[in-house]
Image (cartoon, rainbow, N blue to C red; front, side):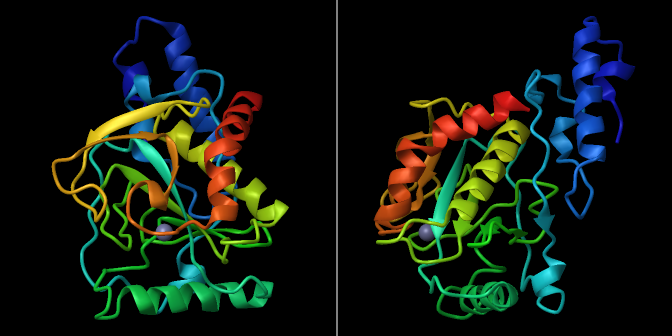
Length: 257
Ligand SMILES: [Zn+2]
């Protein structure tokens, strides 16, 4: 990875130091694939000063889907087009064991790539299990802003993060909540998203069953799937957390590191 801002002679020494700090943080991060999201490098404006959140440990896609490649091409958002973070739940059982997480993600993959959905990979960029494990979902999501898919259509401009479980009535476990907050904090730093409580972003929808193509959408920067489509996802018990609790926790996590 090049340090373009520094090698070009950035006037501010601080800018160089910040970029270097990000590299050091991520060189030592525990993300298994060991890569840095590319737009962190070469774009000083994408570097969040003094709050470069280190990556959570993320199980790579190969841990659940080495033999299940994407069934077609996957596109990525353009730099700067990741505007918000979108939380889902899988609406599946809550009583699974650690040994069953990979099998669950495989079942999501099979459903999502089946003719009924017709997507090219599991829909979500990342998944969080009830034990606090974080998994790469859609291939390439740890290295670039791969576009996801969602029931009701994906309006774009988001990274999709899914609780594995059903949170219509039961909230995610404390471990899952903490892991999701850490994941969202890292992504928010990666894509320079303002997560302060009440922060919003606006964009023109690419189309969903709630926001047709061309519709102007304004949303909180941490949102639930139901904000984008006509769906109950991510369940009442997690939607409340997503909207009212996570923005402050995510922002605190970013500032604390
Ligand atoms: Zn959803």
